[in-house]
Length: 273
Image 1 (cartoon, rainbow, N blue to C red):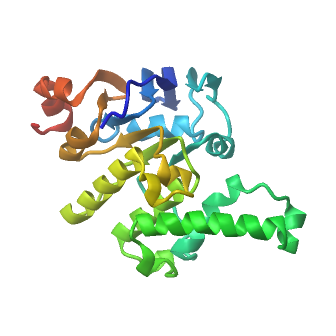
Image 2: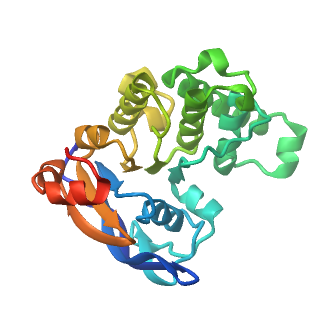
Image 3: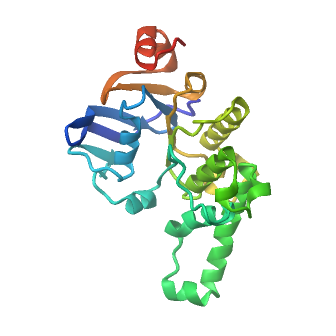
């Protein structure tokens, strides 16, 4: 799925994370490159989600550094990291269950809003025009993810697969340069997985003139980091794969290189590929 030759967009250096006596990450280093889909795989408890949580500021590692476009972001607050253009979905869905799908997506746009509290409360002039612009972007995302029928429905009443789409849409609404996807297909049937895989590829590649006024859909994201257990999906759409086990990086390479080392997969995921 690689667009072009890619340079390093984010660098994770010697990351170590512990919870009491449990070492979740041990001296993990990896590069997230421009114009690629990077998959992080490994068994449950390997530290995959911990890496994403460190990247977007939920966890503070005991040692190691994370750099984004040359800027150190290791211990920056999650809201500031979101403003830098790093968005994510969660393994366990984290939506506003009492709000509609539309309102969940609009909530994500607040980091992009430029009008102050006074202008927004009066709601006329620039604040009104800004609201319209953000609403147009959200409507494009709704159209792209094919969730028009549930746009006004309360998220808490939606089936699991649709809630996963809404969460993906909320991440897109942040206009990210790096999109972190934590098991976006977990618990889905084959048809739902195929839909999500298609959306991931379309997000990465961009839709060009189909959505000319919504940059994240028009141009695509710079890179996607995918944590996923479905090896078929990983091998089909990833440009590069990092394998973790017990908090350590044990392998890295292209799908072909990982596939040529079946001992890694069979030993750490318990299945052949």
